Amino acid sequence: MENSNRKTFMKYFIGFVLIFAMLFIFLGGTFSQDESLTFLMMGIDSKSFKDSSGVRSDTIMLFDLNKRTGDIRIISIPRDTKAKIEGRKNEEKINHSFAYGGPELTLDSVSRLIGKEIEYYVVVDYQVVKEYVDLIGGVDFNVPMDMKYSDPVADPPLLIDLKQGQQVLDGDKTLQYLRFRKGYKDADLGRINAQQTFLKEMISQSISFRNLFKIPGMLSIYSKNVTTNIPLSKLSQYGLTAFKIDMSKIRSETLPGSPKTISGVSYYIHSEDEMNELMKDIFGRD
Image (cartoon, rainbow, N blue to C red):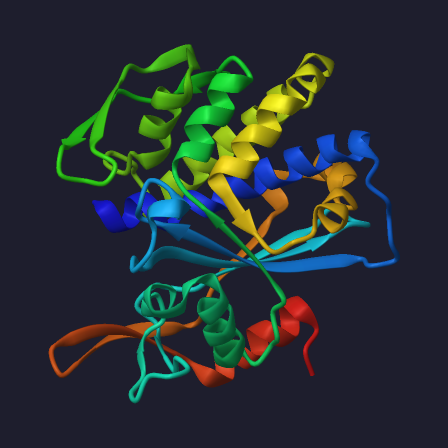
């Protein structure tokens, strides 16, 4: 349960990034000629980045955002991907890099893996979802089915108990909905679709005049729960992209490869040729 709870966490966090960026425009952000922003998103299994020393990243996703068109391209990198990590003798699971050297080492490891230098990263924890939804007064949403599950030893502990139907989800109920995985007919595909449906509603209900008065609270949430090396001035350049988002048209890919057990350890082995084609297709790499 715990792996899948976190795998798609970053799928909807891009919405928060864009919403924050949109609001930052009102703080005097300037525009440049840069058309795309590429960054690595990392989710951690501790409740706070400040308490994340020595932990492994549970979600690694590469984002490419086009300011002009609003297109968003995503590559999910399985946490068990076997990769070279600077300073380690043998190849290891790529999510180990965060424990060894934080986001900087993960950034370096992913860059080496895909053959594309990545400059920026974003690290987030669970609280950003809960606090943001509470700040905007919840999200009016139609829960498609009864959702019930519990895992008291999960971090954070998991207790899901939602009823089917239209309702306002506060921060805690939003986490329940987004972390639920049982009961979807199409398994992970169904869960991903459910999360994307929620994200579209959240963005739609977030972009309103009344929320402009909540900028101080949004900045507080951002500073407490988001760690990034993307300059605020650069992030603000992409704010208007929030108005162009169409979640149904987001291009989402997974690093090509397959699982394999080596010496009793489960790894994800990427396909070099297919990966190169994917990089060329999405990022235009020669």
